[in-house]
Image (cartoon, rainbow, N blue to C red; front, side, top):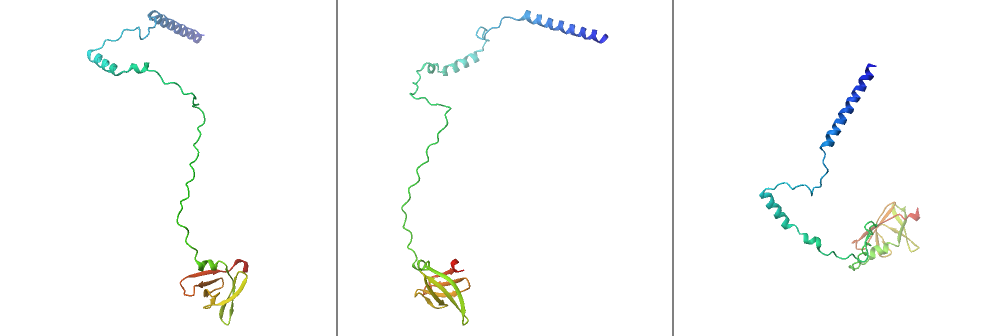
Amino acid sequence: MKAAARQWAILAFLILVWAGLLLARWGQSAPPTRPADRPAPARTEARAGKARADNSRLRTDLLRAPRPALPDTLKNLFAAVEEPPPPPPPKPVAGAPPPPADPFLEGLKRVKFLGFAREEGRALAFVSRDGEFLMAREKELLLNQYLVVRITEDTITLATPDGSREARLTLSPDSR
């Protein structure tokens, strides 16, 4: 019981303190004043001169200037932004014509190496061109335009008769 009485005493004391503070504050309060109603603080001469200099730069005439008319169509500021169309592709530049095809290599496009055989210790190559089957040995002239330089198991090396150009043909896939 002693503890309950003590708690009641503390509660009563706090209520009295709160009421006293409320009355003290209520007695001192005055109606709120607006900043325009308050007296301006006293200024020194230097501050007053500076304020006048600042006001001389203030252009209040711009506030009274006529505003431009609104456009006929208003923009939606929240609309999705449309990307501009891509630029047209550059026009092809008319350059130099491609170099003429090499007749040596163009003729070899139709020649196929079909296989080889060994006869009397020398290699013999089997070649076709446009369905015509031919046989050639090393150091022989093939089709009167190609010199057979070397024959191996999977390649044949052909050159021009003067030996200035050389090309290697591999075993044709349809001959395997």
